Length: 189
Image 1 (cartoon, rainbow, N blue to C red):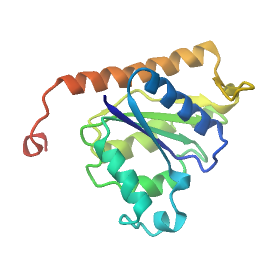
Image 2 (cartoon, rainbow, N blue to C red; image 1 turned 90 degrees about the vertical axis):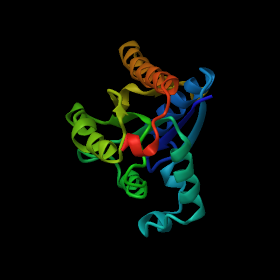
Image 3 (spheres, rainbow, N blue to C red; image 1 turned 180 degrees about the vertical axis):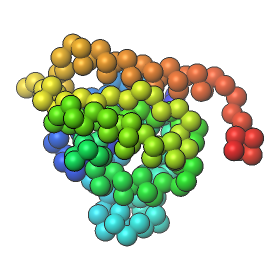
């Protein structure tokens, strides 16, 4: 069973980004993936701000990322970029912390003016962390994310179709990567 880690950079436990991320994770779990969630807002702020990589919560989160085959990075977009708490966490990953991982950027925002933040703000950081495969990614207008009475995420059909497509790219790449023999660390570098 392949491990997929969701890293949620929303500062709010009740945000649409948080709900969308949890919904994607639940879907992957139903598809047979071992899904673990990191909500960066739950990591002690002082440890994040002082880059205490040896703090227990940070050490545990970094260990999850290290073991993952797939990583979903989710964040609301504020002022044309991903959140500061997400940046603080990504800064704690080792330089090649995303090597051998398939990564899906998943962003939400209030206006289509922020749609390019995936490619101009987030993707370069993910690539600099060694991610060999960053799938297409998806930007979702937060006003299109609705919750029903049970808390289930509802999306317009065209948004659901795009989400299913990028999640499908993630799972397909994980399966392809898993089928290939791993290169020795020295040969992969």
